[in-house]
Amino acid sequence: MPLYITCATHAVVTVPEILASRDARQMRQQSWLERHGVTLVSFTVVASGPVKDSELTRRIFNHGLRELRHMAELSGWEIKKQTCLSLATGPEGLLAIDAPAASVKMAAIELEQSHPLGRLWDLDVLTQHGKILSRSDFDQPPRNCLICQRAAALCAREQTHSLAELLARMEALLDAAENAAHA
Image (cartoon, rainbow, N blue to C red; front, side, top):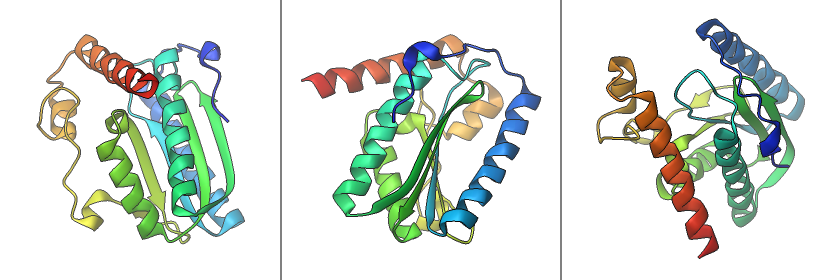
């Protein structure tokens, strides 16, 4: 179920709040793995700056959620349980999928690489035993920056691009995806 766009908090979040949110996400993931015993997709939006819950991030999230559900449907995978959380630290989704984790991760990588908004989605895939599968496990390079072709982690660490540049790029990617969907 998509998140309501108009309910975004626009809260400014601090680094300690983001770190606490990551810890809470890991606890949710462990709880889901224990409860459902299948592959888990933990989905968030890559959002620059101190505001993580906005109309922009929720629209990006909703597109990603539809694509994840479509990916599972096309692959014949059952989504045993799904939830979406609207948090000040950004929208989050959890999907318990009855399918091999490696297959789900490969499909998630393909989605991140092929969809116009894929670069803005963080699709973590966990095995039923809690191991997070990484791109490097599948001989995939690190993700590129939103603005240039350098590694995203490098540009983020060096703060190469301004927040205004990054947000403008996010908006442009969303506009392109929505225009393509309506064409």
